[in-house]
Image (cartoon, rainbow, N blue to C red; front, top):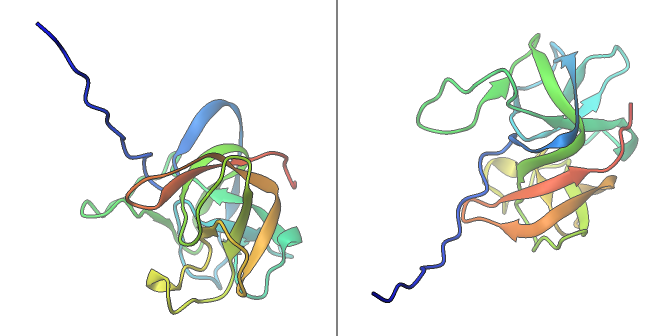
Length: 168
């Protein structure tokens, strides 16, 4: 009997999943009362009062501290995989290691630069603020200590990125 293998490409997972276990550092911070919810896999910024918020227009690369992970908290919406941390919640944040996130723009390349959207974009579903991109654009900032891990992107625009060094 002659057998042939059919090539398969599996999805990379859900936004906010830690993807490699050896070098991860995850910390916990409280989500500010004055911010919108932070979805799993979105970038977070540290505030002056030691709370966090989804990174936004008023934030800089220096305020970015990591990515919200789905480590303990799980989604309660069974129709989507988009769980969130709400105001006052303790949020688990990946500060070093690898994680799957949504890439809204550009073609990722292994070792390539990673940008995070800080202002709304009309061409991206839900504006894309706090989500990641593979090309420089007005409305996004480069994350200096982050690279695309493999350059692969799945049909849901999920990619793997690696945070090389901690900011805090």
